[in-house]
Amino acid sequence: MHHKATQATFNPSYTESEMKAIAAGFVEVRDERTYNGRYFMKNGKKWIHNLEALRKKLNAEYGRYIDDEELSAPAPEGFGYDTETYYLYDSTLSTHNEFSTRFRTMLEKVCINH
Image (cartoon, rainbow, N blue to C red; front, side, top):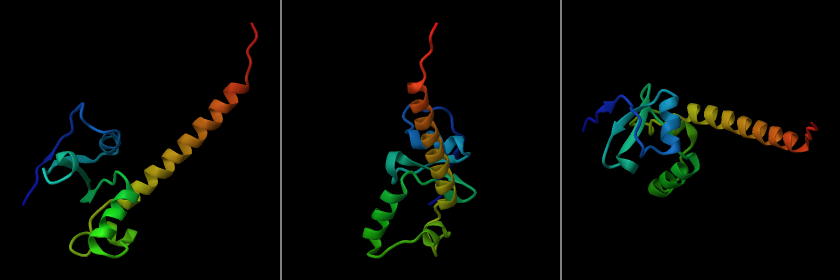
């Protein structure tokens, strides 16, 4: 079955993760069998919303541990997920959150006198 990729326009039902996928250049693909009836693709790879949840689901479904290599390999050898972008985005987000926390802490210590 072929699923149609659509150019993303703002949809108020997009989750935060879906908006991140669009911002990263992924394109929405409608598929009623998937969560929210859509997934996101870029360069033949699927966006990962939550790696831990995905791995847990696949491990249970296949009765074995699914490693990153298998997650990212194209079908039929693998599942075609974009683990590289997931880790890149996740580390960027972690760095951003760490910076934001340090900056907020620093601002709390600053006292401006007029």
